[in-house]
Every structure is written in C-alpha cells, then in structure tokens.
Image (cartoon, rainbow, N blue to C red):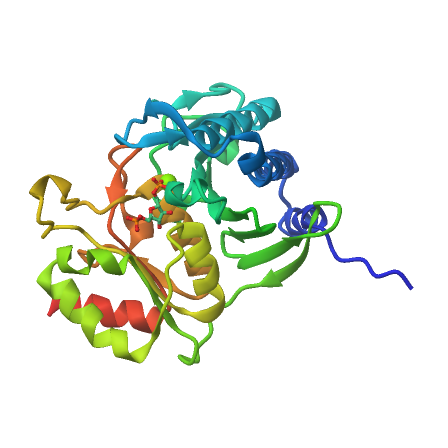
Length: 331
Ligand code: AHM
Ligand code: MG
C-alpha cells in the first residue's frame, strides 16, 4: 500500500473550512510557500552559481546586502503581488513600505526574506520569516483602522522556513504551531503540532556568547546563573535557533548591547526587528505554549510599533524561564 502524508495545502483548507473562513488566505499562503521553494532552490545552488556573495550595496540598517537578500526579496514580492490580496508589505530589504494592492487587498505581510546574513557565505541555515495581519473587514467596511503598524497580538499567522533544510513551521492564531517537512516532490507535508516540552532535560540557552560582556550587569547576572543548568546552542540565524528551541525548550535571547568597548557599537534597542523577526517567533512561541518579552519585561506581542523597521530586545522561549526573567527584571 502506498502511504500518503497530509499536505500543507490540505491542512490549511481543513483549517479554513472548520472556522468558516474564506479561501483568500490559501491563495496568500500558496504564494508564500512558492516563494520559499524558489528561494531554497537559489540558495542550494548558490555556491556553484556564485550567488552567495555581497551585492555591493548597503541596506537601510547599514549592513552589507548579500546577492541572495536581493533575490529573495524580489521573489517574495513577485509572488505576493500576483495574489492581488496583499495591501502592503514591510520587507527587511526595503527602506519604505511597499504598496501592492491598497484598495483591493486584505492582508499586510511583514517579512525578512533571508534572515541570518552571516550564514549566507557558507550556505548554512538561514530563514525566510513572515508575519501576517489582516485588514479589518468587520461588516465589510474598510476603514482607517487599516494600518500596517500592528502589534504582534493582532497577527493572524506567522511562520518561518529554515532554508535550505526543507523545514517549515507556522502558527495560526488560536490554532497552534505546526511544523511541516518537504517531501521528495518539494511539497510541504505531515503537520506536527509543536508544543514546548515541560521537561527541562533538553532545555537550551541560545544567544551570542561573544557579546556577554556587552549586556547590562543585570542581564549578565541572570544569564550567568542559568549557564550551568542548561546546554548552550547558537546557529546565528534566528530561524535555525528558534527551530531547535521549539522542539527542545529553553530560551533564545538577543539582549541590548550597552557595554560595548566601542560605544558606537552599542545597540540599546537590541538588534532584531520587531515586525518581521521578534513578532514572528513570539507569535509562534505563544501558540506552542511559550512566551516572549523584551528587556523592560513587556510582552513582545503587546508592543505597539512606532516604526516599521523598529528594533527590540528579545527573550523568547519556555514560559517558566520567561517568567523567571520577568520577575528578576522587576526585582
Ligand atoms: P540579519 O537580519 O542581518 O541577518 O540579522 C538577524 C540575525 C538573526 O537571524 C540572528 O539571530 C542574529 O542576527 C545573529 O546576530 P549576531 O551575529 O550578532 O549573533
Ligand atoms: Mg534579518
């Protein structure tokens, strides 16, 4: 007997039907998955074809743009445009918000098409991360509340592809966090519900250890107390690190850099971007039973963004560890 796994598309179709939703979201997700596959294809052959180098320009964040960043951005934009269902997008690779279908669209999409730039030159894991919020369609009236700067708790979905591993994880609001694998036909299949383990056995700490002396004294104290209790793992690409964390539990952190020997290198707001990095993992983590806060103890999903490329400090992972940290920050 041949064995077949449930496809991602079928999983989503059942989800939409169960909740009496439209098929627009299927069309949007189909575009996102198609874009991810195409990025993956370019990335896999990137070393051979010479696509893994720098593009020669500097982005809005003052960082070197890689050729792959540009390809990935163009690919995602192309497929999202084709759906005609997207109002606007915020991409890490574009300084400005991009209008796609201001009048007819339903969704706002926030994405980092290729996150984890330091891994690109080596062909090691990177992430395509996305968050989605929806135009307020109550009573079919489209009003001034249709604004792209939405807090993460208003997202309807968020997810990430770990490229080029063929793994895709996505959370749907109030419907859990799910992982899919790419099969031999490059179809995402076999939904597995991700729930952070309660057992602390495999819990991990994940942060750039080389930065530890640049963190605030308080954060250093908390981290140093935890180090002997858990394993330490760091891939250097949020999608990869968070992928492990979802299965094993623990905490991923990107604290504020406030004690850098060169004060110009300080990042008091943290490094990661709220709309398309922190919110994406915070949203998935919440649906997997975890939590996420910033360094003031505010829930990441409750932060009301002021700017589309806003940065934030990030602590995301198992609830007990986040609660412990929040208590410590208050003390
Ligand atoms: P990027 O958007 O420039 O790739 O930066 C985001 C990445 C995350 O994927 C990763 O968690 C973090 O930056 C790693 O930063 P660092 O190299 O400072 O440890
Ligand atoms: Mg990024």
